[in-house]
Length: 140
Image (cartoon, rainbow, N blue to C red; front, side, top):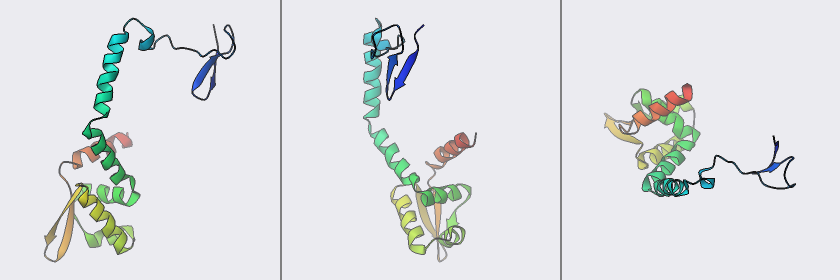
């Protein structure tokens, strides 16, 4: 039996082969007779990764990457909130909260409406189930 040594991304045989010889995984589909099936599968995956849906997911992930924006979204999962409630909860400057609300609204994650003189924000109905699923997965 050969023992493998790992150096960065490469694996080398510790004994039984020439020193410095790279180890190859025998389970790799590229090494077997089913190479054409493997290439077809990879081609399909490559096409999937080039679609607009990946760009859209990237855009959404960037919007949610900011801690304040994420906290706003999580707060809106429970119910609609007035801007003044965000000021009270987060203890952040008004311009910072307004800027991040604008980013979320322009990104399509939240919507706003007026109730009397108060601007109320709510989470977009399409994004709420996605955020809830992610939260459930993280909490498990």
